[in-house]
Amino acid sequence: MEKIISNKAASFASMELARFALERADQRASSILEQYRKSTDRNYTLAGFVMTVFMALTAFLATEKMTLMLVAITLPLWVGTGVALLILFCKVMWVHDFMALGDDAATMLRDDLVDVAMNKGLQDDDKANDEYLHHLVISSIRRTLNATEHNRACLNRRNRYVKRAMTAIIVSVIVSATTTVIMLTLSFLGVLPMT
Image 1 (cartoon, helix red, strand yellow):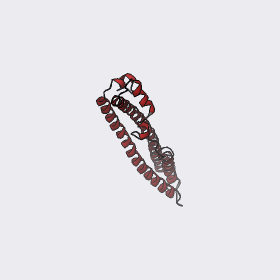
Image 2 (cartoon, rainbow, N blue to C red; image 1 turned 135 degrees about the horizontal axis):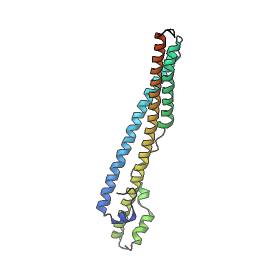
Image 3 (cartoon, one colour; image 1 turned 90 degrees about the horizontal axis):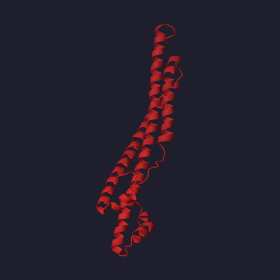
């Protein structure tokens, strides 16, 4: 099926084919929405963990007996977790802008679809209702596709920001580890005091 259902494909599709396509589209959209929900749960857990680490580092940096070496090692971790926490709260932990699946009753009974059914010269109510139902199912497939694409874009955007937050943490760990190695080497060589 094309990304956008052409009028030719829509008029070709039998009701059985259209309902099958709608069922499959609904399953795909539901799967993406479920991934979106699971992503939300994981992101809240991650934000809680990063906040705990950030607060622990803040308390550790606030102690009186901090040596230059401890500050040099701990400060990059504090900055990295702070940046990650800022990214998570500003870009990931927002009110979700997902698009709901399914149709509202008001959109299912629309004048434009009645006009399409009646303009086909179908004055018999049963045939007009069949034609209307066919167009309604095709319209539902299009809306499901739109919701799927929207929710996938939201999920991908959220994942990019989580990746940025994790990158900030990884970089801070690397900087802290490098600083530790440098400080210990300088200490071992006697350039820096060991205190």
